[in-house]
Length: 154
Image (cartoon, rainbow, N blue to C red; front, side):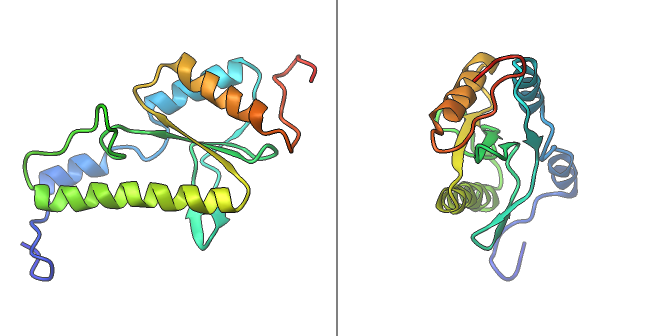
């Protein structure tokens, strides 16, 4: 038990398991990036953006269009449809997951204040849905030059 806040720290085994979960390069991210690349779009991955006193790393970044894409895991980002809350040690996990959701909101606000379009895609979305959302965001960003897919004239 943590004497400062009274929370029970995760067991060493649980900590090891959670530490092994990737922050970047998850399968949903790779599938969406691959599909966008096949469509001819070019982007940066995990590009650090410093804004609003924060260092933010979107999963996919279209720098010229100022579009930042996050592909969020249902557990870590509290998906309303598929997010689950751990049954054990909820005194630890509930605040942890709430902090994640709060950080997501702060990052979105900081990026939007700096002129970025922010798109959040749930990991359970199909690749087609995710790509359609990204392409739509790129095309709706009317004030900047949008990267047309390779081989396509804009």
